Amino acid sequence: MRDPHATVAKVMASQPLNISFRRTLWGPKLRDWSNLVAQIAPFNLVDGSDSFRWNLTKSVLFTVRSLYLHLINTHTPFRHKKI
Image 1 (cartoon, helix red, strand yellow):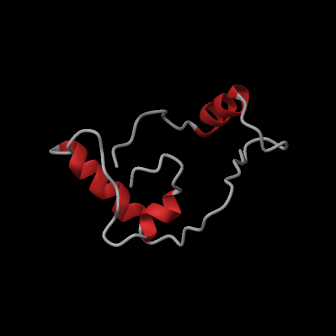
Image 2 (cartoon, one colour):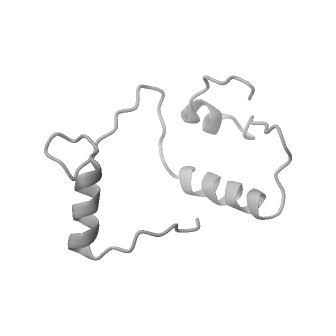
């Protein structure tokens, strides 16, 4: 799909997926793409506006302080997780 404004819901609704990339995906990038599609597929996606909520603050807005406090209070290591 070459529409830069297409929603994820619209793209995922096409069978087979109507999507193209500027460069050919191969090796780890193709595997990562396949894994991402497999993780999204079970969800019922709908067109609409997104809203972002940060549940670590009362205002539901992201702050670096809230992330920092969460990480030090839960002893959560901050590292990249491969999908």
